[in-house]
Length: 71
Image (cartoon, rainbow, N blue to C red):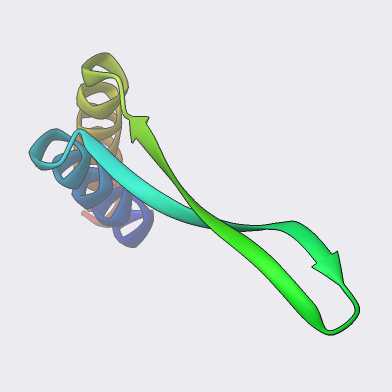
C-alpha cells in the first residue's frame, strides 16, 4: 500500500508540475500502391488541477495509512 501510494503521489506531483503535454499522431492521408502520404497531427492534453491535487492527497493518505498499519 505504501508503494502504490507513493506512485500515485508522484504522479500527482508530476501532473501539478506539468499540467499540459502534447502527443504526435501519424495518420495515413492517402495510399496509392506502395506510395503512402502521411500527416503528423499534434494533440494537446491538459490535466485538471483538481485531479492532480486529488491524486497527490490520495497518494499521501495511502502512504500514511500503510506506515500506520505497519506499527
